[in-house]
Image 1 (cartoon, rainbow, N blue to C red):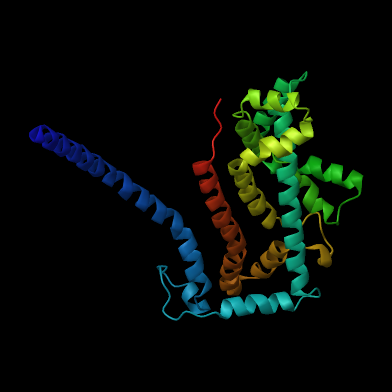
Image 2: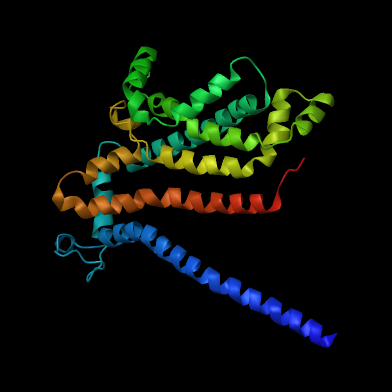
Length: 292
């Protein structure tokens, strides 16, 4: 009996060793791909701390000999020299980003619930339209959007930045696909208990949709934070931080370092939100699940 158990243990250890040996190439490939994706971020950070004379050295260097924070100092000096205080631009960006993120998540969740769990005439056609709209970028309908906003009288107001960004075909599609996994028996049980559609949506369905909601938050925050709107907002007190930073960075070759510093500065908030939301997504997907 002891020999049989020993042979089984040896066989199991051999299989485990083979599995580990097979996973090594995959780990190496993933590490190479990860480093390749981190390379642009690394170069942006390095160029943001390079002095001007090192920015145009040929061949380009992957490092800096004399790191400096003058590019960041120049960026803030340029922004402070505007007629509007720097804090106003920050407030505009935060207000637009938070408003767009909250409204986009709310509308995507409610519309996806109706499309996924409510039967009504034309539902399949609407779903097909949503899938088709994923093929087109916002630039395709920009002229039509501008005409509609002009007729509404919201040009040169913060609403011109917020309203077009609320509707998100990608967010609606992701939420619909996720809500479709909810068992219909759960919805029917809630209806039998007397719950209305609004209560079913927010108290029963949405608590189980944290991974999808966190994914939408990541995309919505990133898109809203980078909204410029230079062609629809002209008053200085309504401009967002990306608009002003891009204007300051596009003033000539001498400000190439300022452009890199601005890119790093604008990169920090989305990265923080991504890290926080990704942790919630992983924890929720690991500890939650619904089965029929």
